[in-house]
Image (cartoon, rainbow, N blue to C red):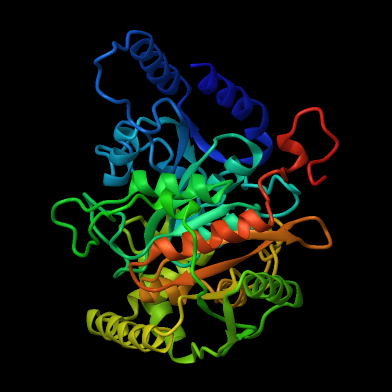
Length: 453
């Protein structure tokens, strides 16, 4: 009970500045926490074991329905629309014993890598509120980084977990396709999007992934529950692995020097640990067009066009120019290219590359651009992420340091299909060698001047 009250107090204090929550479920959370506290007090000696996260607060992203709670998709006119059923991942989170604090901010329809939906206060980066926490899980990442929840639910259809995690100095996992169910609604982006965890440590992210994962009857694709919990990978010894790395991504070009530096420092550390690293090349030129065709169709969710932002209206218009046949051919092309990528990487245990092409941007930085220019900026910035949504491979974002202006920066590790365990183990090994979780933004550490010491 005390823990829930503490987080609700922090939300009341800091959310007006950070814009990390759309909806705060204070009464619901306090009632749930009180019920759990009473159950704990009355727990008998022969009682069944408690769920693994009994009483731990969490947030749910506002693209994901929770029965009886507003689900706006980042559209102001839908802010009071109540969801009628729980998403499967919400059910699993509740079954694990979590207390839901509220629904976190998302970009409109999850379409942009910054969280500034029209009609809402923009989500801001706790490390520097002039900058974005990323998107579309920007509210979730801002909340975890600022201490407005210990862990958060997010979703990733093109970097929407990994990007915010990197912008905010957190760990974010995009699981393998089929590991987390899309029940009861189903998949909307032909396999691109997955739900996953955002947390401050690899262990916390892995443990939350354990709670989220597992098939639900009728899923269009699914992976069986692993024999061992993902959290066990954190302490597993690792044999020397073969790890590839990228310094550029055609057709987007070279990574920003700061992003490339983060990759090379990580590669050097992995080699010091005994792993064998080799530079490779991946050309994504053929993937860009079909991926955009599939991705932009995600804005066509039955929301009236006049409620949408300028960018999403533009994407909707482009999408509706395409016939069903054009969409299906794009899916087939995307799948064929994804097969080629997986085949090219099949001799590697993991791949190291940046999360984004360059470090985070300021809030509203691209707001005044023409729509087509804005879209080109978005496509270029997030380019290292969507290819692995197309392939369905697991990917984990981890922090590695700071930019000269004091913002977090990190890398992502991409694993073999259905092998989330290995990249979690590598990430934990990196984290143990170069601990990060002691770094917290000053805004999250009450009464302290800063938090990087």
